[in-house]
Image: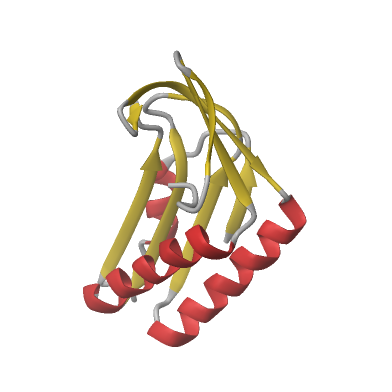
Length: 138
C-alpha cells in the first residue's frame, strides 16, 4: 500500500493491517517533525510533492524491497502540506516472517525514498524559511 496524503495516519491501523498469521515481525519507521534543525528552532515545516512521480517512485521502491528482501508486505505513507512540530511526516511498515529481512527492507525503503522521490521540505523558523537540500525528507 502506498499513500500520499495531507491527512495524518493511524500507526495502530497500519500495524494491525500487517499482523497476519505469516508475519513473525512488523518493523516500523515513523518520521516526525523535529523542533530543531542546524541549530535553528523549527516552528513548522512545509512539504511539497509531485504526486504522480512520487507515487511511481514509491511503487518502484516498494516492489524492489519486496523482491530483494522476500518480505510479505510493505506500507508506505507520506504526508505533504504544513506540519507542526511532533506531527507525523511518514511511515514505513514492513511485515515479514523474520525480523532481519524486515529491518533490512525498512532501511532500504527509507534510504531510497530520501534519494529518489520528488518530495521537498521547507523548514519555517524564527530566523526565516529554509529549503532542505540534499538530505531528503525524514
